[in-house]
Amino acid sequence: NNNTGADSVITKNNGGNKLADGKQSFYIRTENRSAWNTRATNFQLGIFQGSWDGPSRATLGFEKDGQVNYVNGSNDARVNFGSYIDNAWNLIEIEWRSSDASARYRINSGNWTSWIPFTGGGSFVGFDTVGFVTWYLGAGGVYIDDLR
Image 1: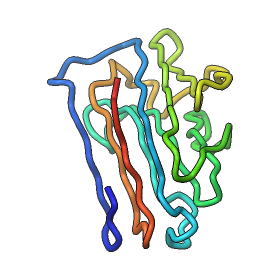
Image 2: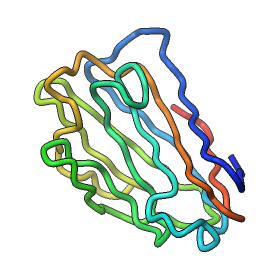
Image 3: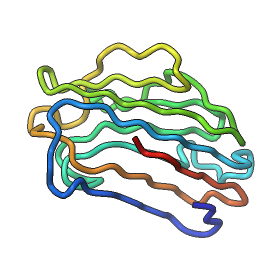
């Protein structure tokens, strides 16, 4: 997505097959993030139950300053855990488990975060959707490749 003038939301559903435990990996490459608009979080990706605004989700935010954060489902706070490289492919991984409705995250094969409760864990029955959202990237862009 190299969209200079509009929001973009892209989701892909797993045909209704929900995974109670699993792992999702993405490759992302940002382009010219210094030209993104003034919003702090211009790009998010995540896994969901049903849809982007479904009852359960584990999401990551990519900040204009190069920081990556997850949402702590206990208090809905964004917590920075690493950084990404502009104009280069970055490997992002999310692993989740149903036993305590938590997820852990890592970037570029670095250290995993601790297990963190994800949003909506009380109604979690499994993730079945992946998605991406961007907000007015200005002259910059975001590219996604090789979901695995």
